[in-house]
Length: 192
Image 1 (tube, rainbow, N blue to C red):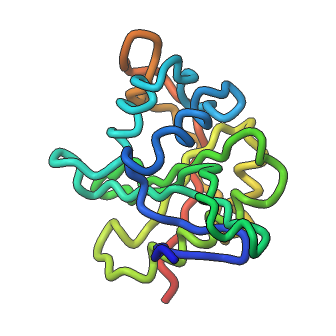
Image 2: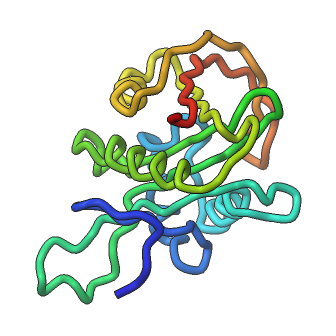
C-alpha cells in the first residue's frame, strides 16, 4: 500500500504532483461550481499550468499542497487507484501575515463533509511539522458569501478576522491578472 501524508477513515492526503494527479485536478477545476476563486479551466494544459503554480518551485519553495483522495470503500476495490476529489494546502505566504491556506472539493462531492475532514487532516499535518514565526498562523481568506467554507473553518477552530479588500493575481481567460477580491480572514494559531 502507498504511503500517505495523512489519512482518515474516508480520505488520504498525499503531496500534489502533476504526474499523479493532473487528470483528477483538471476534472475538479474545469467545473465552474468548484472554481470560485478563478475561472474554470478550459483545457488540460491550462489545468497543468495552474497546478504547477500550486506545487513547490524555486520561486515559492514554501508551497505545500496535497491531493485529497477518496479511499476505496470495499476490500475488492483496494487495488483501485484512489479518486482525487480535491486539493488543500498553503497557497500564499506573507511575512507578518501568516500562511494562507486554500482548498477545493470537486462539486460532485460537496455536502458530504469531505472539506471539513480534509481540513482537519491538513491542519494536523501542518502543525506536526516544526514551524517558526509567521508560519505559526494559518489564514483562510473566504468570500463573505461562502457560508459553507465559513462553517468548515469554524468547525476546525479558526477565529473570525477582518473583512479585507485586496488585489490577488488570478487566472483569467488568456493568463493571469490582478483582480480586486473581497474576503474575510479566518485565523488559526498553532496550539500551545
